[in-house]
Amino acid sequence: MRTRMIILCLLGVALAGVLLDRRPCAAATPASKPSVGGPTSRPAVSHDTVAPTSKPSSNPASNPTSNPTSNPTSAPVENANWKVWKTDDYVIAVPRDWPQQPGVPPPYLLGDGKVAPLKDDLGDAIQVGIKVERYEVTKDSPSFTAQKDQKKTAKDLQSGPAWRNNIIRPKLIETRLDTLRLSDGTEAAFTRTKMLKKGPRLSLELKLFAKDKAPIVKEKAPTTKDKGPATKDNGPTTKATGPTTKSTGPTTKPVIVKPRDYRGVVVTAWISTGNRTQFINKSRDLERLLKAYLTTLCFNPEKFDTTALDKAYESKPTTQPTSGAGAKPKNP
Image (cartoon, rainbow, N blue to C red):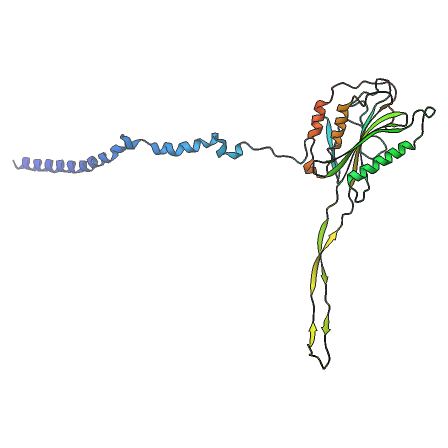
């Protein structure tokens, strides 16, 4: 009987210990239930934070570097028709495949058989060319320089010799002068002169006169101006002011360095044919192309522009030049 009581006591103690161990577990389970279900357990916050970061990649406004704009260049890229001729003073577009005239300073390019047939409809040679030259200028404007050149041309034609028993004489047929501005804003003058020259040859000359004045540099050079001590004494009957000293000290004045030269440039293009053909009158597209070459001249490479030249090539006739027999005559 005593043994039974001891066993029951031991069982009661063991049961009490088991109950005490299970009470904390029962208390912890209610706190973990919200993570399993219920309206507050949906991970909505994680979607809100991820969604905004994925959308801007498809929105150009939020990603300005995704579509970079084109970077303008200082000079257009050369193409199959023309190339850039650049010096320390100027830049201009010239025909790519025109050969250089031997024995003269470049560029002096010949376009015989390139943009026109070698001979006209009456069998006379057709000569086409472009050259760029420097000229000495004073303070005259390009327009005034062009006027003087026109007067000189007319005078030379009047004093020229006659041919065929004084029946055919050189003469000035028509001339025109226009003022314009180059792509960099430089003032220029354009002349168109049609004349009958020695040969006899009918010639159309296009000229562009321009000059770029060298920049005026202002420098500061110190100059000393000191009048030294000056004593003023009016004698015993007057009030003596005593010795006075006036000194302005060193002063600085700007020194203007004048331009060394005005860098005058004249670009000439020509079409020369026999005196009996109408080739020049019917070649307006060729004349427009040559003028477009002339007007690409500029003194600032960053402003170099060939828009008019490219358009002139688009409208130029696609007729292929015909070959002619015999050697090519020398260009004028």
